[in-house]
Every structure is written in structure tokens, then in C-alpha cells.
Image (cartoon, rainbow, N blue to C red):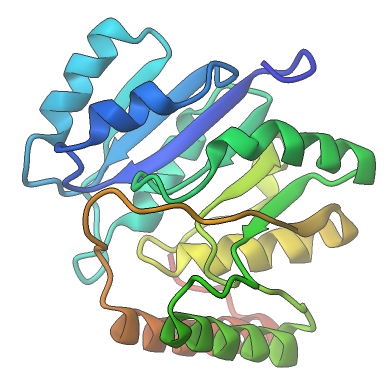
Length: 238
């Protein structure tokens, strides 16, 4: 718990069996609930998660195997968020790169600044490869031009928000595009109660599941299309 409020951690995962137990054992005690959602895992991720669930009461292993073009990152997040029961919801990738131990510091900043939704920015950070920084910067510029939102990290995979704003997020994107969607929808719905706060990325467990160039292009087109359909009063497709 944090300041009398319960906290849930939601993590999408695919083929994380080799390090999932180590990762879960490292998660701080202030998390009352840990929800891991497997999407199309072909290794023993679900079996390992089931074993962890038997010995760790706060841990839940769920599955959502829906995909868009083979990717189900967004669907896994949506399932985990819907299942979360705590007052505060934290989302982070299950590769260990995001510093979930920083949540108390970030939460206290949220309270001080009256923030309901935080997107945790990894930038600026000279340790992150230049080509990744360049790609994110391009998406940041597109978002600033189309939406008027100045953001440092359009693709951050760590977010902290209060449960009472979930209904306002209107999440629909089942693939990687959930990452820009959740930020844009939170900004649109919450205004000044949406903010970025700085974190420092850590070393990854396992290998990335992304083709950065292909994913970046899909983000580029989705961000533009999303703005177009909203501007013209057309409802985005689920």
C-alpha cells in the first residue's frame, strides 16, 4: 500500500518463462497485487506463472491470446487493467527495464501536483541507442503538431494512474499502438491532470519482441489516422 491506497502492477508478457520467477521476486512489497497477462506465449510462461501464483498470494497469472498482425501487447494490457482491483494501477513491461521500485517517489509527486495519470519518460538518456531516440523524437514531433501535446517519450511502457480514470481512457488498440493511444486519450480526457515524470531505464531481461523500424512506421501512421478520425467525428475501429 501507498499512503493507505492499494496498488496493482499490470504486466503484459510473452515467452518470459526463463526469468519470470526472478522478476516477480524482485517486485517491492508495496504492490498489493501483481497481474501478469500472457499473450501468445509458446514457452512455459503460463506454467511458470501458475507455479508462482501458488506460492505468491498477490500474484495472478492471466491469459489473453488475441492479436493484431501477431501482436497482442494492447490486449494484454487491457485485460490486466480490467482485472486490477487496487486504487492505483501501475503498468510496466515484464522485461525488467522499468523501475517499478520508483513508484512511491512518483506517486508522491502525483499527489503534490494533483496528477491522475503519469507517463514515465525515459528521455533524455544518453545511454539509450541513438536510433531509438531518433525514432521516438520523430513520433514526439508528430504528436506535438497534430495534438498540441509536447511529450518526451511517446512510447514509454510505464504508466501510473488512479483507478477512477480507467473509464475515461477508452482503450481499443490491441497491438503496440496501445502505447501512444493511452497517453493521447489520457491527455484528451484529463488535461492538466496528465503529466510525464522522469525515470531511468534498467537492463532488460531477455530479448525484445519488437521490430523497431516496422513498429515505428505503424505508430507513425496510427497517430496520424487517429487524429484524422477524431477531427472528422469518426469513431476509431476497435
